[in-house]
Length: 115
Image (cartoon, rainbow, N blue to C red):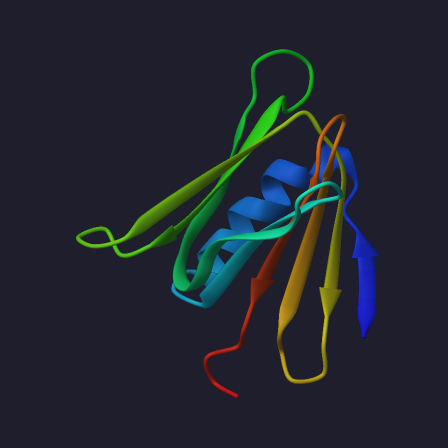
């Protein structure tokens, strides 16, 4: 497994490219809360995209959207992301870990639909 920390000054471009390249991939969104345990917000829904609110000098929030436009749609907002890590597996699967300034870590798991 290869792990990469995405530099903050590259987040917007990285996720613009990432969203375009992985649109439709089965996505699972989990919030890793220390008190209540992992919470699944979405399970194997097609990724719609990842975007940022860019008010101010740095991205202050990011939004992950998954699901069908005509059916189930899930949007998860992460306020004040601090660190974003990408881990890729040999089979093409990708995990994105988003650590915010406060609150639980969000884990986005994408499964390669071609493997």
